[in-house]
Image 1 (cartoon, rainbow, N blue to C red):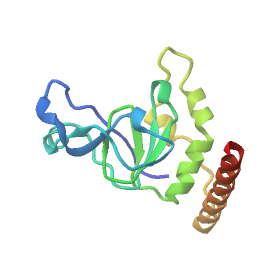
Image 2: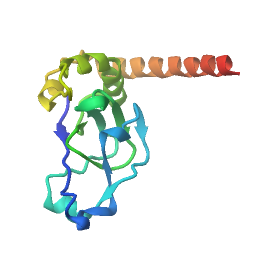
Image 3: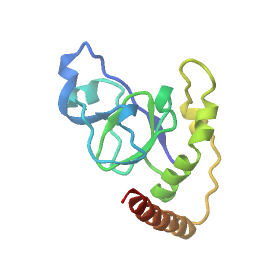
Image 4: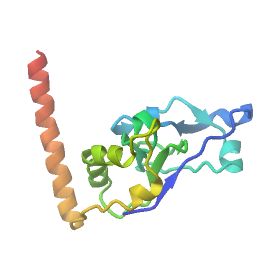
Length: 162
């Protein structure tokens, strides 16, 4: 499906690793949508001296631990993540198709996390998930239909709230 990588947390003891200009996403920042801003940042030094990886714009993210397990997002800007987040960076499909597949399968990922005090899924569980992959043209058609339906749902929701 693509190249999946997890992030890291630079040492909090190193003040020179934080408050830089590189966005650093935690799973609580995942919003099941496009991520346009991330409140916390790290420095170039943290990126160079730790195992933190810079994910490109368009990366599809999924939370692997705790209460946010299965939450997803798509980066609208280059960003790093903590180790509780897994990013698909070089995907071999329509990124929105992957996004909607992950969204539709959240319960499955939560179930994979087990029933412990802190449920978690590993990167391996994510990469070993079989994703039915139609031809790219069909992926585009499916995504367009989903987005068309969301527009209708939004209109219905607005009319119910009025």
